Image (cartoon, rainbow, N blue to C red; front, side, top):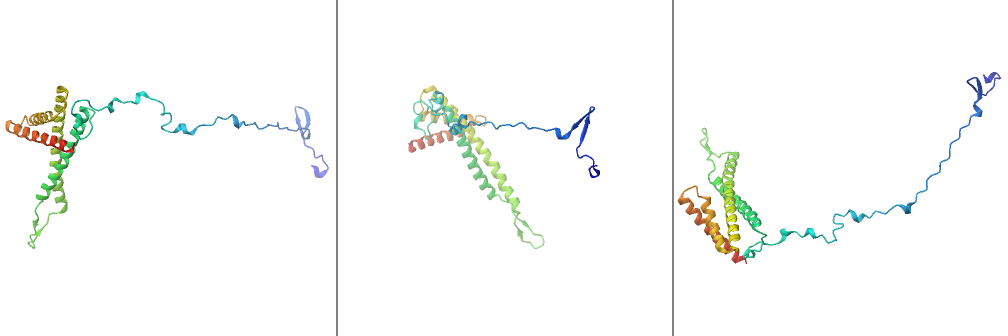
Length: 223
């Protein structure tokens, strides 16, 4: 112990040899920071990320044939430009279905309001109590859902038959005129009620012919 005059040096004995700790030195290698050449880094063009980047070139395959209007004689007299029988089929059927659905809903609403459930008589006071609001609402909704889809589906089927027959006549005759529309309306009405008897079929034929005539007159007035 050094307080009693012993040596202050620490000695380690390794495999019979005495090694002084003062003789061991550790050296750390010097590492130099790498030189970063900023000028060699390529600069990225952010404009290439735009969704329309590169579309300024001439791309011939973007010229779609669907944009060409129908070349059948008389098709330009319609309210909307038509690209063929597919446009007339979709527009006509969809318009008649939505229109029939709305008219049927209004008719059902009127029927529901006219046929509200009557009130009940109070056995104690003898006064007439009005029916509950939920019962009245349920009555009106039942009438709307009864007449709305029925009239909408019927109008959609009539529109589908009319446009299929009308497009077929246009392709067969090579032109579109009022005669095609009247014949299409008559045939569509006859097919629609063909299973309901002769009287119902004649009634439907006359109504659809009048509707086609009114449609032709409306187009002439607009044009």
